[in-house]
Image (cartoon, rainbow, N blue to C red; front, side, top):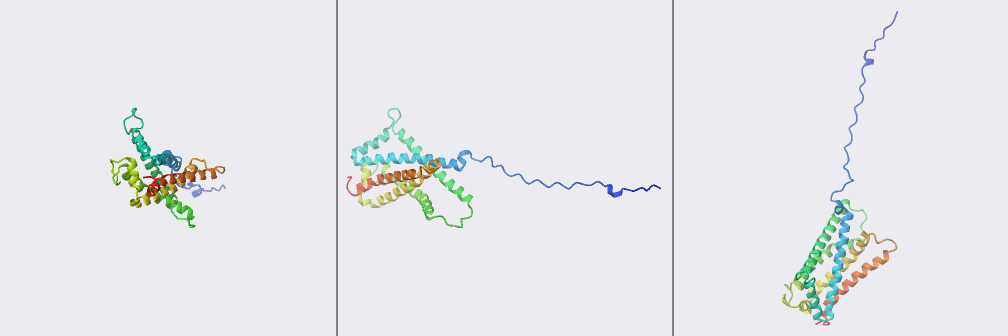
Length: 256
């Protein structure tokens, strides 16, 4: 007798388990929006280049101011030369106007890079550190922030006072040397105080800015650290002393 075994449900098809859903694809980080200028390195490069332009301008401007120690005529000749540079190749005041445009663009780009870098650093660190920053670092931050505001206000006043003569006792029709001397008379001591505060702020701002520029350019390695640190301090000190020499000379009667 032959037994027959029925397979029944044992032969039912077996279904494979469902495949797990794929995780969502991560956004690609290979491409950054904004290109080089949108990156932190690009913004630091903008700050370094514009900062170098502004430092060069300050050095030349200081050298021109010091001509008042030679004579009033020498200072007036310097001021006149700024307006006739390039003549007769280009019209009157063309080179000076182009220089002013370059300086204005440099200031705007410098501020833009500084503000965007600060915001980026703040977003990258949404939670404050448990350990407080060093006093020196906090001091530098305040100097760069409030010093920049003070410098901006000073530049506006400086233009209204010595360039356009709007708030200067000698008026716009006077010679540049007359505006300079009348602007720093002892009776206007508060102008000199504002000038001193602004110039000191420029020096502190410049001291930190030069060192940051050296770091951005990759110059501040171990062997050059002390040298570049001294260079930044020296340039800042020379500019502060050079710019303050003129108002102090007028206030004390050395320049009349």
